[in-house]
Length: 372
Image (cartoon, rainbow, N blue to C red; front, side, top):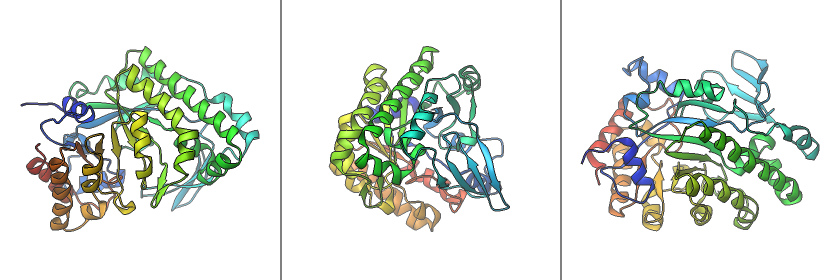
């Protein structure tokens, strides 16, 4: 049966088994630059070259929309004041996790000063390839983003997503992890106001987008609620403070508008899986190997309830091909055996330690072993 990417991912996220597992990934800009030196065509994006099933993404920008400024620059790094007012250190010539130095909100006084900026706005949208860094996106008015998006010739066949943060990720960008966690315990009323503002902003912005005739196939919700050893807070605190707002957003996107939901959290969010499913999440991503996530185990425990995206170790992707084959094939076969729905993807993003030859080999393994 011939099936395009849109049909395939829709089935995987809807509880059905398609022709084969899906595929998507997020190579760093430096990785794509390396691959071009190793033979990737210069005029073709890696996601197009490898015919990824999830390719294009519209981001809903939930920042304070402050003017971005370079505060300090050396040969090795830049310190930037970003659209949320955070001071972030970016190393030059290498991607990965930037280093936050300072955040805009330390307490209620800062929140009262900035909260009025959190309203839907025509400039809160950007369009680009899934997995690209924000500076690679086309950002502007809704009309400008729409014009760029309409030039994409593959939208009828690929699964197109929209990206929004979850309540915690939204707040963390404005306060920093440590401050959010302390305020959740010591000033819960302040956090409640911020989470409510998050919900209003996301729903209002998405309504604005939909009112212009744009409707993606699914939504990618980013919320780094965990670290290597588990959740950043107790399950009870998550249920009481964060989950209700996630439920409301997912309910609007999924129940009212038919979008399928991929939820991203770094670390090990296993304790939150029942609550994420309760909220309506359809797929878990990226399943970090170094945090103990293993789709071979998850497939047997949760495979009848949720799809999986990720869990291919970047260390294995960077190493010898026999180790890469063992990693990829064992996880594909475990998902097929459990009739679990799987989208092949790195366990976060693809660093420039991964040669083009290895990534091509991984896609060949998907073609060979990935049919259901």
